[in-house]
Image (cartoon, rainbow, N blue to C red; front, side, top):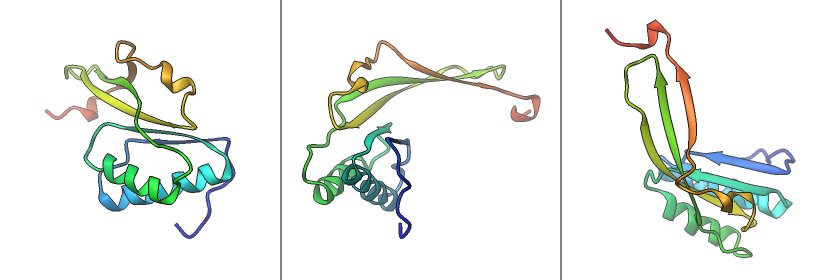
Length: 123
């Protein structure tokens, strides 16, 4: 984290809080982006370090209340694999709060479709 983030109007972070160190690093980058004035969207599928991320972000950037107040549904569709669709609730943090992410509803899923090649399927 010694190199500053490049300028950006919007910073997106998605599904990265698998480890304590990563959650803390993300909090540092989000605080850095907000200090610069960037809008930030963070999505998390509740992997375990969301609370730690929020606590660290609040410590680094106490000017805003940060909370995952928007919720959506991610659907993974594995076309051509014979694998059933997977669904997972996604929590979304938006800073500053009250932007377009607040319109997300669990009833309106985001769908990611991956086309499987024959080499992807274990036989």
